[in-house]
Picture 1 (tube, rainbow, N blue to C red):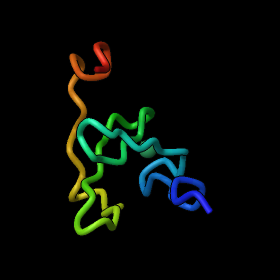
Picture 2 (cartoon, rainbow, N blue to C red; picture 1 turned 180 degrees about the horizontal axis):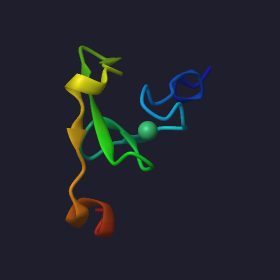
Picture 3 (cartoon, rainbow, N blue to C red; picture 1 turned 45 degrees about the horizontal axis):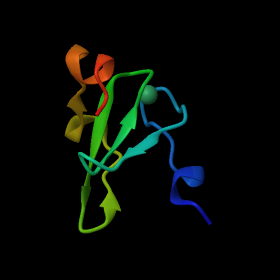
Length: 60
Ligand SMILES: [Zn+2]
């Protein structure tokens, strides 16, 4: 089972994406990035980082 299939954004309940280069779970809709600590995604709004405009426009 894919972990991303059971994860959803706590803010918008939408689909989230794993970003390998930053090792984060990102919600493109809310522009939030959730950290992964000890292989466990921390899907908590307060822990999320805001994805900057540059990051979302220039994905590496
Ligand atoms: Zn969201």
